[in-house]
Amino acid sequence: MANELDCRGMNCPAPVLQVRNTLEKGALASLTVLLDNEAARQNVCRFLENQNYEVSSEKSGDEYRVFANRGDLPKETAAVPSISPINKRGDAKRKIMVLVTGIYMGHGDDGLGDMLMFNFLKTLKEMGGELWRLSFVNSGVTFTVEGSEAVPILQELADSGVKITACGACLAYFHVLDKIQVGEVTNMLEIVNGMREADSVITV
Image (cartoon, rainbow, N blue to C red; front, side, top):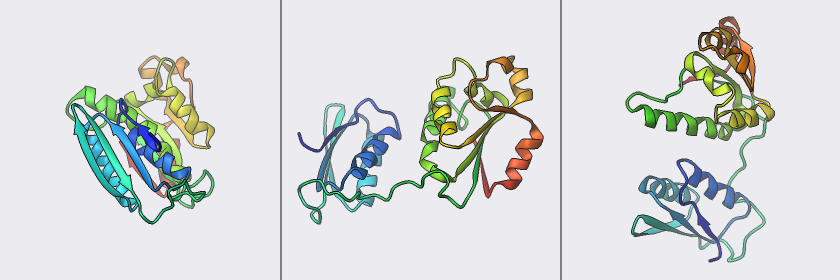
């Protein structure tokens, strides 16, 4: 089916990002999105509604189809993106520092916290040029070392210009100082100075 996007098997926020990326390639008069969980359905519907689409959905078994239509667009793909692109590195005026203090996001179930933190790291690039520095302390430093699935994600951020640092004392405490794969070793003074220089600091 034309303009059909299969987002089944994707964890949040991947379905919304896939829809956004599809619309950025060209404004579509209609789009059908396949999903396999209720949270993704709600998030995709809300995103499409914010892009001025008329949205409906239907459920079949454990799967969903979301239908989006815009009557003000031509039936063929337009050349002009329907969504403003994210700021490129260097275009932003603000500098945001993100401080990651552990391997879990939030309190409660560690399995859920682990999944949320990994998805958070994957989604950080959506901050665009405003993401200035990403610093890891305590058990968070293990995201930067050999064997971590987060290393390719962090390397992509580093390649885009984000400065990534990991607390040297923390790396030594966990006996992984010699295993760091991305970013540079730092100390608490540099972290505090970074906080002072940043326009805002987000701690997770």
